[in-house]
Length: 321
Image 1 (cartoon, rainbow, N blue to C red):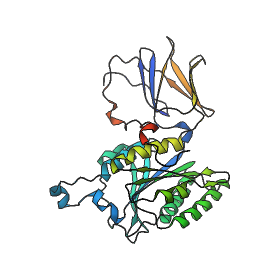
Image 2: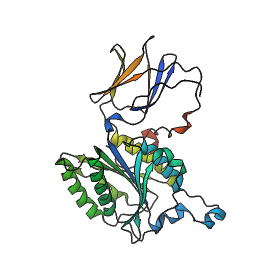
Image 3: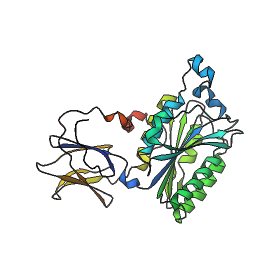
């Protein structure tokens, strides 16, 4: 890389100056400062074909693990939202269908190196309450370390066995959020394939709770290959603030206003001689020095997760706020 990297101020991950046009990539949405993210992947027996064969069979069978690349992509993307880029990852619906196999706390920057061969014991059912209990207990611990908000992404390819328990527990969680005993939480539920029960998902996700609103949102992906993209769309819709933001130059003049939500990459022009710009969002201000001009297009962007897909590509399946 021939250009000199100046200081990059959070929440930006990358800032380029091309003849007075600034391209600033957001590392994460600054309004979700302190967000803790977890990813729960369905480990029930119906998923076994998607993970493909293991061990020696994986080498000779030529059958691809369809889940692994999607999990790597999601991990890399979700880490851009997480407060420290480390996500709790677990398989759920394992063993008798109510067990959880925790993969570990994984960093998004190393996502491409992780292997996801599937759980040790594929589950005989799809019981979701243990996932919620696991995440709530995890977020209690994280809240003591400064987490201000929580997000659990849950993937399933089956009908859920215990929707009544899930709804009752969600009600309890909402009360704790309202009373301040838990930070604000959201659950993103993505169903994959044709064995899921979308009516059941809608009943869980449409519920509104006093003082909290929606805890859940969901979409349905027809194929495993669409899963990561749908997660990105839903997380963006759920986590991005509607208030938008304003960009000022170093003299305090407004350069650009975002009325609704911030895109992943902010693009705007600065006046000649301007040395920095400030992003104001939800009352917080972030001032970023402007780097020297780029004299060529960089090809060093491969390290970043793909930009979040636009909501229009999701096919509009399921519930939207």
